[in-house]
Amino acid sequence: ELNNVEPESGLLQAILNKDQHLFTLLMKVIASPILAYNPPIASLEEAMSRLGPRLFKKLLLIAALRKEAALLSSKLEIKDYWAESALSAMCAARLSQSTEGIEIEEAFLGGFMQAFSELLMIQNFPDYRQASQEQVLHPLSCVEMEDENYDTNHTLVAYITAKKWGLSDSLCLSLYHHHTSTLKSIQNDNIRTGGALLALANNCIADWNALMSNE
Image (cartoon, rainbow, N blue to C red; front, side):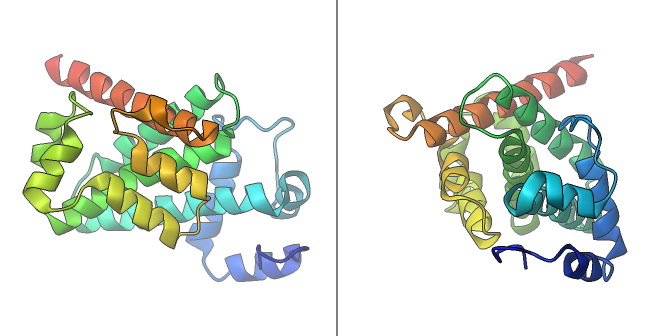
């Protein structure tokens, strides 16, 4: 419905009413202080009229990722995963406010998708979490480590998952390149900036986690 030229808010409401958990998460995302919509958005209909279908779809994808990540992390018994993924997303969103060409909603979504790809790696490779924690302060070498140990890596998983979820090409490629050492050579401004932003958010959270562990 969101891909239509003029989506019907009533139909969207009816669809979302079938999944109250998702609807609740969506309204929490819309009310997030990270996004800081002013004046605050109080209803689904107001969100549709003020944001338009393109931005609204990104917020819905964020809510859906939150739901799926919570279910999967619970299944895998990873209690701290949600806090880490939320920090990654919020950090990326904050950093986007100091950049040009990257929407805050896009950065927020990218931060979640980056963390979600790591959760998918954990699901498929039981030792991945410990291995990634040992490499977390060396972001430019983690992809090589993952390729060597698992014949794939979380940037590729993030790219494939982002394509599956219908994210923009620039965000998909930013996810794919966010650990490359040749970011400066990427000609597309949005992909280069998006990749650097996600890498910086990743490093900020890694440094914070290391500081908390030391204390």
